[in-house]
Image 1: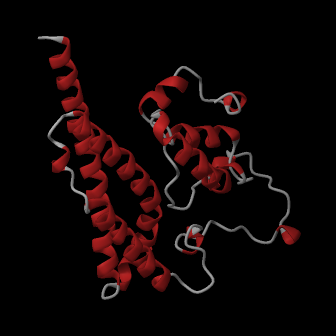
Image 2 (image 1 turned 180 degrees about the vertical axis):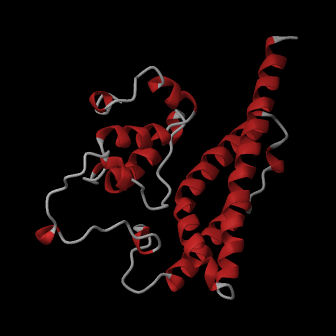
Length: 215
């Protein structure tokens, strides 16, 4: 096989891989949109929908990256650029816009869409002004259960690093600032945000309070 033929095969593989990942993002976006259309008649779905809708920005970023990769591959494969689905980005964007519009309508007044604490409110202790000092010697992690809010994830793909970096403030708000979590608990949650190569990079670091800042 000549060098030119090898390059064509490589581009085809890139296109196929990007197409699969793009289709997966579209499928997830459609699933959120389908749920959005149902919540009007099925109010019990509202909490689940409002959690799902927070993933749309990440899914849109993934879609754009893979869609651009597909287009680039088609252009490189002479004569195949006509196979690009021109209307797909606008269609997907429309699904996201409609889903977010519905989310705003069903979000309880005074609640922030990004801060989902009104769905699963955190465990509150009695006011500290009247609370005596704890005498139990049990582990503080008994109160460490977080609200069921999705934490940001990162798989080591540098293309998605800006999105993870921007959403890392969620981790700080949901985990870092919680005084009732031990440092070891926080490290467990941090490692739970990592997948693939990112998880492999910290796999050799023992989980302990001393290693949290290192991770």
